[in-house]
Image 1 (cartoon, rainbow, N blue to C red):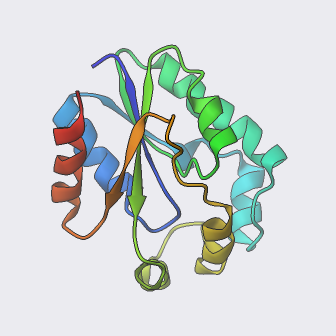
Image 2 (spheres, rainbow, N blue to C red; image 1 turned 45 degrees about the horizontal axis):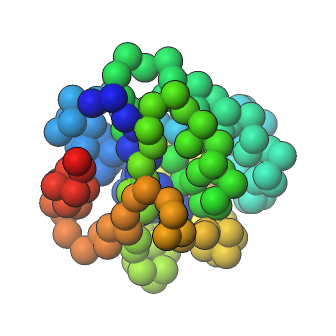
Length: 162
């Protein structure tokens, strides 16, 4: 695989779980975008503050660098909520396609309320949903409704992969 697949969406959609499964299927390196946040970003989110574009910029650059540093392709778990953020990721040396995981807001709220050990509080869900810009017609990618097991969702993305 000589391209990158970014598994995107708001917090609680299952990006990490689906991304890991997809990376296994594709034989690609998995990159966890959350691990690349600067400490100040993690502290801000943990305190309940939504990140600004200026705060996201160095993080997105680090994600793109991780994509470029991997030998072969990657599967990346990254929110990539807005078109400009995806534009930064598309600057990677290999082609980039997106898999936008879609989960109903009430299910997202339930998942986030039950989640432990993550810096992203459920209180930021509304700001993420307000920030989210779905893929545009000229962006390479697909919407994937998360209405099945993570393995089945990863299989859908894999089946659509050229």
